Amino acid sequence: MANYWRLTYEKKIYLYDTYTKKTREFIPLSEDEVDIYYCGPTVYNYVHLGNFRPTVTFDLLTRFLTEIGYEVKCVSNYTDIDDKIIKEAQKEHKTEKELSSFYINAYEDCLNKLNILPLYNHPKASEYIDKMADFIQAMIDNNTAYKTKDDIYFRVSKIEDYGVLSNQKIDDLEAGKRIDVNSQKENPLDFALWKLTDDDGIKFDTILGRGRPGWHTECVVMVNNVFHKPLIDIHGGGFDLKFPHHENEIAQSEAINHTHLANYWMHVGFLLTNGIKMSKSLGNSILAKDVLERFSGNAVRLFFLSTHYRAPINYTEENLQQAEKQFSRYYQTINKAVHQLELHELTPQNLRQSDYDEFMDALAHDLNVSNSLAVIDRMTKELNSLLMKKEKDYAQISSLCFTYQKLLNILGFKLDISHLTETDKEMFALYQEARNRKDYETSDKYRSHLIELGII
Ligand SMILES: [Zn+2]
Image (tube, rainbow, N blue to C red; front, side, top):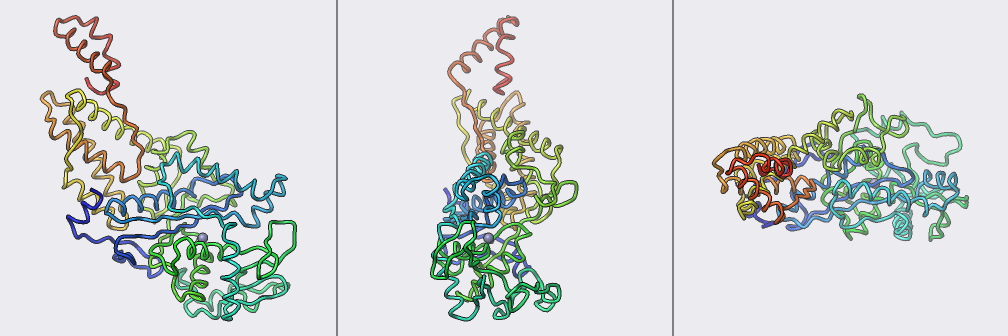
């Protein structure tokens, strides 16, 4: 079944690649497998809601590609080595590991609520220190990195197309930066790969000397080592990671592997509050865990999906309420349809090919979820009107219900549909009996429960 769509149709998939700034046909490196890596959180506090926009986007991409028949290996990391973590751990009198474990748990609780598929791997930077040291040593050996008294830096001048991803010219970048007096950098654009230090923060003894890695090296080394490949299909993250983070990941990959690290780069738009980017430093952030206490994971997912992943999306209480209402309409529709079928010992079956194709085609065009949601909305109306008819067409209901459920699953919604119990069915029989003998007092007793089940 998983291969159904791909085998029936030879349709193409298109993704917008931020490296070439073009919508390109998506052709994976291997025929059956797709590798995706997106940058995960630095685990030093509770993350704000915007952090989950890339998560939901790449979860959708994983589900879509899996539906087509690919084996998708989706990976996201935890940055658990970082100066912010050290600072926060010292403040809270905890070790860095205690602090990061605590916030990883909190993060994973949100992943569960959002119904994010288990990742192929969820590497922590701290688990790859020796690999990072080897990687940096290789850059020193080939002259793309250099050691100063305190740090090891990447030599940006060695990379010809530095700045392509973020669409910046080296000259402009250089003009905008000045070496501060204390820096031992050769060039203001050079970035730190390893901090040589014996301070109170977490540090490691490696071939490079005592210290800790820089963030940009962490990700590129995790990508190489988790996939065991110098080049993967898709690398993604929030828009703000393009520069310097992803630009610097690419530079290191070029220095060692002569690749751009990924064949397609995907960047997800910002979450705004009152038109301004949500960020911790601006003090306008709303914690994901708080939102997920007040709204269902399905509503938050629908809120994110309702705007194209590259466009900015505005957080308001009303937008979330609207998404909650909308999802509840989907849920009630499917629940009703399943119960009405069960009442007649029927199950949802038979795919409605035309709806399915239209829905998949929309996703195949750079995840155009708005168009795929338009299919869902149309089906919601149709299913509800079929359910309201006196003479019901159960074959139609069954196939529409089957398809509807399948499409909602591809969008990643969690559908905990209850099933009719024997008691429910008996109650329905008693209700009908009472009505037939015009005993409305008795039938009224069952009414509210049966309405709730959607069978009257
Ligand atoms: Zn990263």
